[in-house]
Image 1 (cartoon, each protein chain N blue to C red):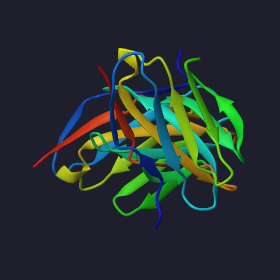
Image 2: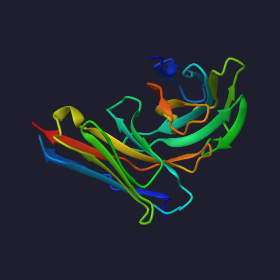
Image 3: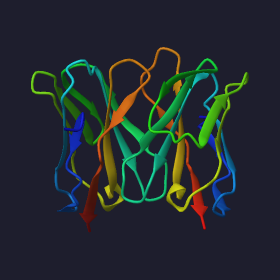
Image 4: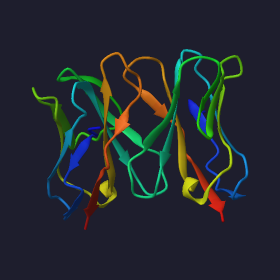
Length: 112
Length: 110
């Protein structure tokens, strides 16, 4: 079965640079979530989109922005990167009428 | 107080043991309960999903929900070394936001 796809899988950036993470949800899933997971921590909710509109906002820094496109894929844009932004970034998608989220493999971002 | 509390462990058991993982929550509006398994550096994998009090069984896994006590459990029977992972409970009100527990690290020794 098709799963959530994230790209890139690994990304190395320097401080103050920008990064763009991409997420392709499971086909026919209309809701996308972004999470940040630091070492040894649980996933921290950043932001979610439903039908291309922001549906909820968590602990997303102002330096980050995200959007969902007409094909339902989503991009997380991160600017002025800081060392503390180094983490695993997960995208999850949810289908219509469902409550379960299905996670992608994650993007490991390293800021040097 | 966090909305979802989960003992981070680590929990170490011998192969074949029954494992009990637990979470408590504070908001009675929570209706949907999930357990995820996460291997190191991998995305969380949905194991169990339930929305009512009682038990739900899937192979060696049983999810239990007690809404009156605001307590959920995941039992793993005949635990295997391949079950060694972090187990996260996740709870949802039916809206867009899902609250995750801190995750319990489980080690099953061969």
